[in-house]
Length: 280
Image 1 (tube, rainbow, N blue to C red):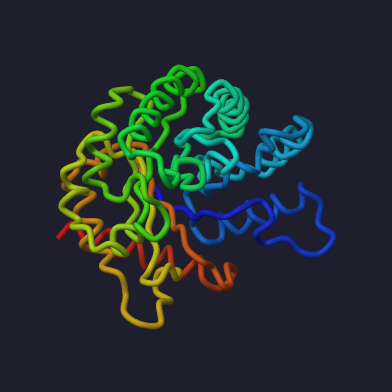
Image 2 (cartoon, one colour):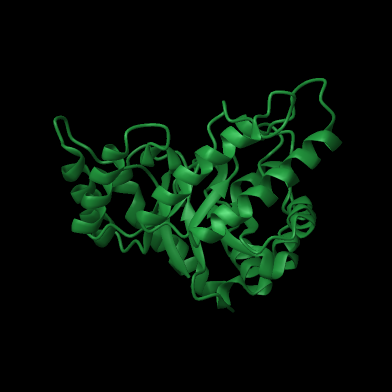
């Protein structure tokens, strides 16, 4: 299992840092904290901005060997994929640029949560939204395939989304989409918020291509003030799904860091220990 964190290029920046200096700090930090990878928001590649900015990021990532392997927050809210205001051709144009730039930076996974883009508008039927999402996903498939990227559809908790709220429903949705580059993500935090059974992760099988975790209350692992998330149970479900046997299996910490410098290393150490113990 590869362990990483969700962050951005400027997560450790100091005042006056250039982009190159920001990436250099992050790359050095990743090595010191024994991180296998980092996961950036897609917004870092400036999909609707000047390509020169992405080129600068690309040079810095390569020069400093930052292990950038996955991206999240795929679609901005103004690129609707459900509801009456969908302009599919414009969304797909955005996706072509975004996935091309993510791939150039080393991205292999792009997470499709994006509740702002997929949330079902008031007065719009869920059945209509469901059909729109499937149409979008199937149109996205050849773009993802061309860039050798897997789209990981992310179920979100009911407070944040009203479209897809469980790994169980995600299994059905991804099965219905039936595209090899549109697969599934399991996020322990969202599952815990809605009380979803980890057995659904085990049942996801080969559809599962990415995973997120956080401690209770979306704190960094080991830093929750009240009660620790059941990491070993979640990890045992990941093992039962067969996910652990994938050579590209990844687990990213997606949480609210209050002090990344102090929290990342012990958080990753805790997760590695829980991962090893989950095999018992």
